[in-house]
Picture 1 (spheres, rainbow, N blue to C red):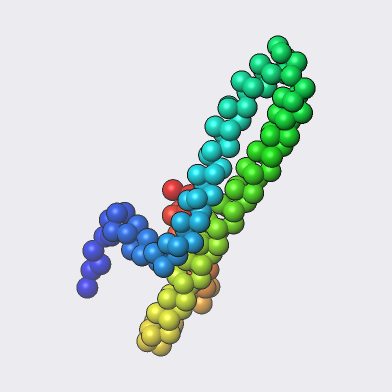
Picture 2: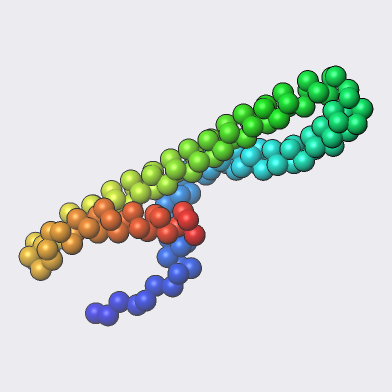
Length: 141
């Protein structure tokens, strides 16, 4: 029996099925991504008051407010970036865990002859390294 080649779209759709149970957690990452991106706009919005209020008009309120706002934006950006990276990493590791579990259950169902014909190092490589490579390719694609 000859195996049919799998298209990249079909393979990606199959892998995406492993991530579907984590859609609620992914929505947290999307919100964090929006907040992270909004800080860029916040920095741009602070430039005009900083330049007008502190350099030209010498407004003491602006001279105190703008540095505090910049620090607050950096803290907010850092928190949003942390949440984004943490949640995406957690989803990735969870998908890897499920992939390895499914592959392990598949290995348990194989006949003993399969283990006679394939070296144990190759099987362990499939269980650990190959799954890690698939996850790396899908998360960084």
